[in-house]
Length: 371
Image 1: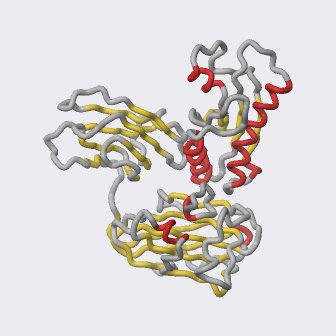
Image 2 (image 1 turned 30 degrees about the vertical axis):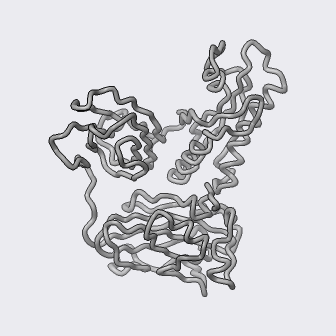
Image 3 (image 1 turned 135 degrees about the vertical axis):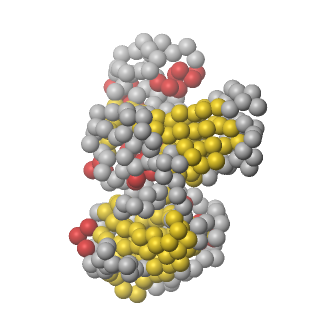
């Protein structure tokens, strides 16, 4: 079974979380790691594509428009996912698109006035429906594709409201509140919470209540447009019949601040990633896909306490930063948004590390928001 971090492949599809604003994703200039349609459409060969995962949470009609920069030609395919194995089924040629345009290419985008009630394409949806949208161009174009959405009907409400996922309101609870770090105002965010019996489910809103009787230590992730990526492990120390409150403070994006991704780690004396780094790299990839205007500086560091910053040490830190840059570039992020620089051992987190964990923390990369 093939897996991929590239959003030119189904397995790396960008999760669309906001349907009130348009999505903007950059074409990677390639088809990722696999031509997904060579058996489905023998006359069609994938050249340059992006994948999006859509969960409109709507009972009604869902419509979208697609536009490309410079009016570059494109086609599209829309699939409905019956379960979480959609991408595996796609690889095995077990699924077919519900909407597609393959025989001709739009040269001006899909036409439609945003004030018009008749966007196109259009599908009828239920609340639980999940879709995958693939947009393709024959060129090696690396500009942006824009997708606008319209939801007509009953939309699941998550704005400024507590969502209680307990089956019994009398049982103990864990409440998670998401707030702007500067203003402490509620933030409508997307969140994954592992440890509450609903692992890897995507939640959208500002306040959530989960069963405290089922809870164990939590792992929380949020990748909300306009805010820094948030990843945190929370230790649950309360008794089974007590309530707990977890406050998540999201920080707005700003040039000059650093995005902390502690798990981008390397083997000793190597620019090869440790296995723990791969989920963190995917989070960084998704962060840059969601915030498509952000430019970053990737800063490499090594663990070399008590030594001079020799050429060998400096090169290793350069290579680590370049390894992250290469990963992002290979998975569809424009190289113009990426700068890689090494600092050798001049900025170690622990100048005199006393454990393997502290040594590992020194051999890292940090992400500086440039623009």
